[in-house]
Image (cartoon, rainbow, N blue to C red; front, side, top):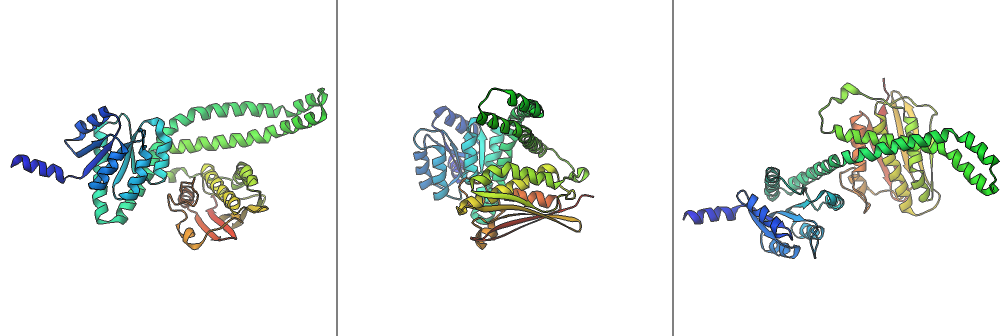
Length: 397
C-alpha cells in the first residue's frame, strides 16, 4: 500500500518532458531532478511529439541541436498543438541567435545554459510548473506571465553580451580617433593631391573622399559613443540607482541631425528624402542624450521602413520641431503605408510587430523612455496616407 501511495503521488505530479539526443545528458537530468519532479526523457523530437499527443505535459525542456528535427522545429509544433505547455531550451552560449529568434517568436519562456546548475534549474522548473498550473485557471494570466518572462529572458541575454561588446567598441573608438586626426589633415592632403600626377577624374574622386573624412568620422564617433552609453546603461540595469538624483539634459538639435545622418542610407534606399523643419536653436530638454538618440533613430528607421513598404518613389520623412511654453515637441512624419485602427491600437505592445524581422520592442522602448523623462508620446496614422509620431518633452531648468 505504501508503494502504491508513493507511485500514485509521483504520477499525480505535473510532467516535465526532457528532449536530448545524448543519453548521458538524459541520465544526468533524470537522476539530478527525479526526486523533485516527475521526469520523462526522450532522445528525439519525434518521440517528444508522441508524448505530447498522449500525455498532459506541463513543461517541455529541449536541446536545440539534434539530428533530424531540430529543437526549434519541435518548439514550433509544440506551441501550435499544446499552447499551455511551458516551453524551454537548454543550450550552449554559442547558440544565442536561435534562442533570440525563439524568444521573439514566443516559442520559449526560458533558456538554460549548459552546463546547468542543479539549484538554479530546480527553481526554474518550479516556476514553470506554477505558471502551467495558473494557465489552467486563467489563460490571460498565463499570457501575462509568459510576456513578462520573455522580457526578463531578453534582459538576461543582453547582460551576457554586454561584456563582450565593450572590448570591440573600445577598439572602434580608438581607430575612429585616428581617422579624425587624418580628417584634420584634409587641407594638406588636398594640396598633395593637387600636385600629384593623377588623372583628373581620379583626383576629383580622391578629393571628395578627403573632404568627407571629417564629417564621416564625426558621425561615426557620435554613433560609437551612443553605443557605449547604451552598453553602460545595460550594465546599470542590475544596479539600484536613484534616477531623480542625476537628472540629465540634452540639446535636441544635434541629436536630430545625427539621427538623420545615421538613417540617411536607409531613407535613400527607400527612394525617399529626409529633412528637418523647425527653429535653428532649440532649448535643452530634460532627457539624456543617449535616450533621446535611441528614440529618434528608432522612429526615423520605422518611418523609412514604412515609406519603403509603400513602394512608391519620392517618399518623404520629416522631423518637425516646435517649442511651446516649457515644452519641446518633435514630430517624425512619413508618407508611408500607414496603419489601420486595429494595428494602431496594438502598436507599442512588446513583441507585437508587422514586420517578419522585427521584435516589437522598439516602440515599446521609445514609449517607456519618453514616459520616464516626464514626456508624452502619441502616434497618429492612416492607411495609404502615412504616420506621425509626436513626442513632447519638458524643457530643462
